[in-house]
Length: 401
Image 1 (cartoon, rainbow, N blue to C red):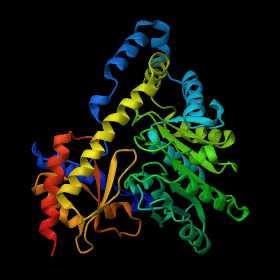
Image 2 (image 1 turned 180 degrees about the horizontal axis):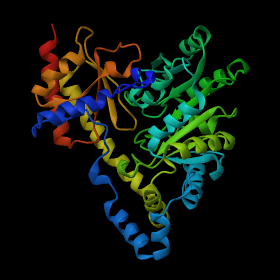
Image 3 (image 1 turned 90 degrees about the horizontal axis):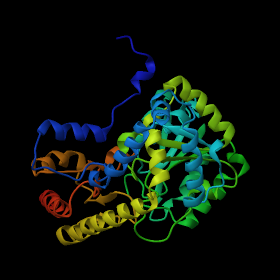
C-alpha cells in the first residue's frame, strides 16, 4: 500500500497493546489492574432499557432517533447538557457553545485538525495521557512534557518552556484526577496557570482541558474547571458520559466559543456527519427521566471504597518500598518503584504472576518514567485488588537489589 507520509508518524496505543497481550494469554486467573474501564455493574442498564423501550414505543421518537440528525448534536440534549454544565461546572455557556462528539477522543481530533499546523508544538503534563494525543500525530507535532508536582503543572517550568520552545500552539491538560496519575490540580494552581496564559504574548496559545473524570470526586471539595475560571476565552473543554454512564454509547462533547464550535462542526460534518443519534436519544431521555446526580454519587461511593482498599494493600505489601499518589477521585493510581527497576521490562514477569499494569514510560513524551506504572481500581473487586497488589508486590520485591 502506498501510504501518505503522515502515516509514518501514526502509532498504536500502548494501553491497547497490553490489552492485546492479555487477550492472547487467555488467562482467567489474571487480575487486571491495567485497564481504564469503569465498573460494568454500575452501568444504568435497567434505566437504559426503560428509556430505549420508551423511544421505540413512540413512533415519532423512534423515527427521529433512527434517522440522520444534526452534526452539532441532538438539539434537546444540547439544551439539557448546557443547563447541567451551568449547574455542575458553573460554566457561563448555552447550547451554542457545545458540539456533541464521538467521545472525548474525537474532540481531541477535531481540535487538532482546527488548530495544528505541521511541526507545531503541543505542551502536555509530565506524565500525561499520550494515547489521547494520537490525533495530533499526523501533523508531526513536537509534543513536550512539562513537570508536575502534587498541586498540578509547575508554573515556573511551564513559563520556561513557553519562552524556549518554538511554535507552541496548544497546551493539553487533565486537571481533574489525571490519567495516569490520579492527581487533581489545586485551585491556586489553576488560577496561576490561567493568569500566566492570559498574558498578551500568549494570545496565540490555546488550552485544551480534558475532563472525563471530573465528576468522580470522592474526597475533598469541588474545584472549578479551568473553563469555568477562564476570563479570556482561551480554554476549550472536553467532557463525556463515558465514565458517569457507560463508554459504549460513545457520547462526548466539546465546549468552546461559539465561532470556534461552529468551525469544529464543519470539520465533523466532513468526518462522520454526526455522532450516534440513537445513543444521544437514550442519554437525552435518561437525563429527563432519571436523577443522574444520584447515579454519579453511587459511582463515587463505590470507587472511594476500592481506592482505599488499594491504598491499604499497597501500604501493607510494599510499605516504604514504593511511592504512590493517593487520589481524591477518578479511577487511577500512580506508583514509582526504585529507579533501577524498568517497569516495561518487568511487565512480562507480572503477567506470569497473574497481575497486569500499564508501564509508566508510555505516558512520558520523552520516554522517561521507566520506573513508574499506572494502576486501575475501578474494574476489579475488593478481593481482586488485594490479591493483585500482593502479586505485584512479590514481583517488585524480586527485583529489589
